[in-house]
Length: 234
Ligand code: ADE
Image 1 (tube, protein in one colour):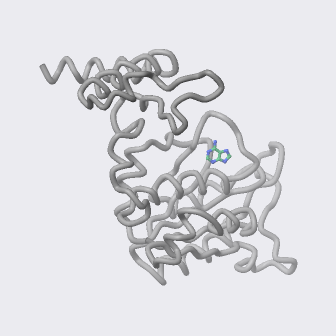
Image 2: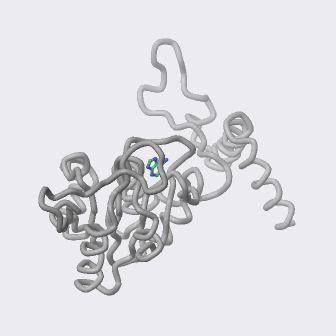
């Protein structure tokens, strides 16, 4: 998978790939990461990339010209590139999007700063537009990293142990059961005794009950989805 980050602030993004799982995937040539800066494509004398909004409104909007030229070039270099824009005015990103997008060969994330991107750029080039939640960030860079991370762990070879994908929260509507590490007792708090007894079918049913409790508490909407799905299976 190749990722291209289209951003005015490469430094905000780059550090994320320096450590841990994604840096290993880069070293193994499973992931390739590139950066393109709209400023390098600006026709204006001072490499301007933004201007006041036509029709009024607060803040600066990113101009169409640098992004049109950059994205045309990008598409010329790879006709299969899948272009994603990050904005709060979009559909929410979900785990099933992460799984679907993990099958692409090249994804470009276009991050806006200031008050956003001229809508004509999005209309012309967006294959998809995502929001990562109902709040406003100062730019799309963090959102692009969130989405890139969620996609990457679904790419074959990125995670060490492929088991860890299938039982996670959002692979089913239920949230994951709590996990515990060693020691079995820490500061007088023990892990649930059933976890220690080695009876795997009893551990499985306890985990299911704990998953349902967590889901009821944190995400009652997801529990409803789980129960509806179960009733269809009967
Ligand atoms: N840019 C600013 N806020 C955002 C959000 N919530 N999701 C995606 N991109 C954004």
